[in-house]
Length: 209
View 1 (cartoon, rainbow, N blue to C red):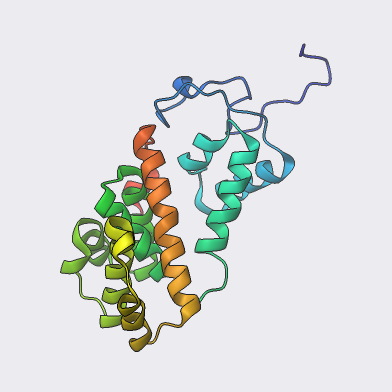
View 2: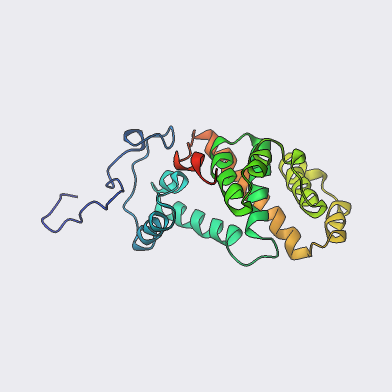
């Protein structure tokens, strides 16, 4: 469509719709032009800038297709931010434990920063990234992460005894669903990030150190 005198000006701190991924600081290895953001997603991107100072690259990576971006944002926010019997820190711990098993550079960097920030313990955050089994965890947290890792590596072998072990430690059935859902989401995200060589924002590396 030809430009007109009333064409929308490019958003501050965001590439215009015709910019390709290869022309931006490395986000993914794919050459996918960014679509024009819907009003809802433009507001969401601005909320990210206002709250954390930048737009996470995972959002930029999905921004070639508004349906995919909006679905990703909605599912992520529901799993990681909505009310749950799991704390935000526990959900981030699951993200890191799963991402460590999958060796996902993007998610380990981004969610490792979240664990450092939410726990107030940079050493614990780094230990979680490298090997959660070396971190000082409550028995309940260790069991939660063991279950998430089993979802990651051998989900077909999960039996009622695995769920019952979580119940004995105080997790309800809704909590077990949430552990499995967060673990499953990050297995998908890890595989996508690795497949397209998604790179984290540099800002994550220095956060909560």
